[in-house]
Length: 149
Image 1 (cartoon, rainbow, N blue to C red):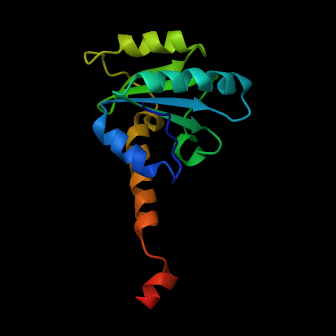
Image 2 (image 1 turned 90 degrees about the vertical axis):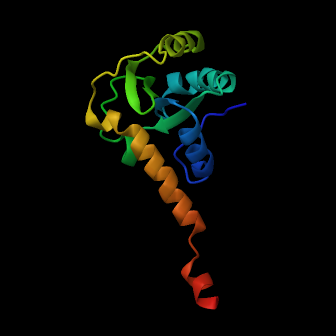
């Protein structure tokens, strides 16, 4: 059973594994204060549970502003879908599990790459770098431990 990941340090190992194992990445761009996003989160999690071949990431545009800050989010939820690092969908979605599920099913391996703002296109690389950076922070010895070894 797959779960929705975040860009947090706690999710870094799972995010690294998922990004390397799954060709599809679905990023939900939302905000904690958005009631629609809060209601949609349950459906997003249900989709993640049903799709082991897809990495689902929930980015809060404010809490994760260093990753999402340059992306123009006009309304919520906004969804970005990548196939092997190529952007194949970016836009506002109705916050309904069935609609997003049909969208994902329609984006097969043959889906065409679309154009978008460079900040959107760079999301997979930025998420991977965040996950790698968090792993280095976790595995690096602290200065106090290094001095005692």
